[in-house]
Length: 405
Image (cartoon, rainbow, N blue to C red; front, side, top):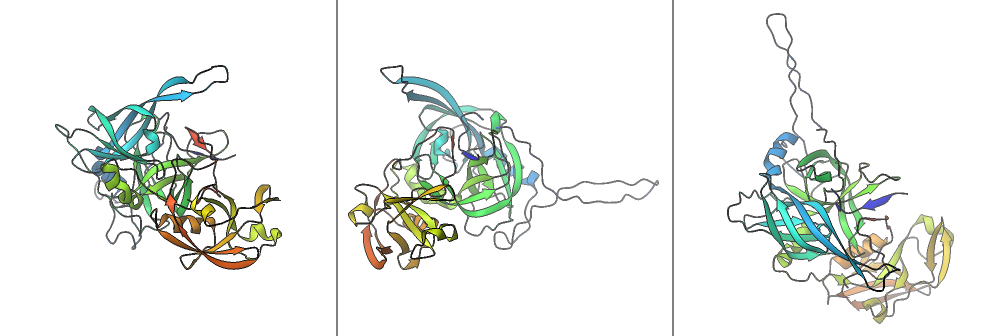
């Protein structure tokens, strides 16, 4: 069974083979032939970069000084069935991060510093300093750290955009897998608009998938494009069988998502995400045997009590059916549009909710008891944790039908 590994609770071994072209030059004179090996530039698609990219070595020289090694001293409260009171367990999480400005701000994953009582940052020159967590958002799995910039030679990484990237564009990842500081791996963008589970159980949308080798300890490090600009924050990997290492499927939170929350994180403000309060299943050909009234949409599985969806009268399923080994709740409302745009899947609904702020009104088109009707809902603020979601400190199973906000 595959699983999504989120944490560098321990750090991860990476073999960093560079993907580069080979240029051959024949030497003349003395009957000898000389073969010259040289890296070719990492060429990006015209949509994401109009000029020739740098080589992986050039990107590394520019970016590696801005990547840091993060260590978090963790204290967790655990309840044993043999103890009357919770016990405290101490440990250390390790991960990566990167400098975003000359003031000492460092971006990383929220799960790297989750439960931390002390955070230290190690720079490329081996200097280690204490850091404070200025802001953290579990819903996007992002955290902003701050170090005292006095006496530090800080190399801020340029932030790119994730809007124009395409499948096949080259990528470079730099991080600290298994404590091997500033390890470089290369690959390509394998897919776009993936969804992964945030530490609080909600879904993160528009995630970048890459085959650049990521392992525990890479979390929080930068995913770079062919020009050395940050396009994502490495966050999770999918593993196969009993292995906890990379199988070539890694996930990065888009840098545009980080740009949206950075101002609030810098001021320590709580990030408010819009909340509907439903869990849905995508209607497609796999559910044909259920004879649903539509061929696409988001079938409501459950509605959280007291949520905006519940207040608007939306209903979840009440009859369980087995479809290809999965349990599907039928009989509930089907969401077919949001703000006038078609909803063909749970992903569409999640993206529609995510484009709003709490307090916004959202127009939903639903099929209820076989009849189409329009519902106006005032979205709420997402709770700290998704309802009925079991959280894991180190790994989680893939969840194609997670909470939609």
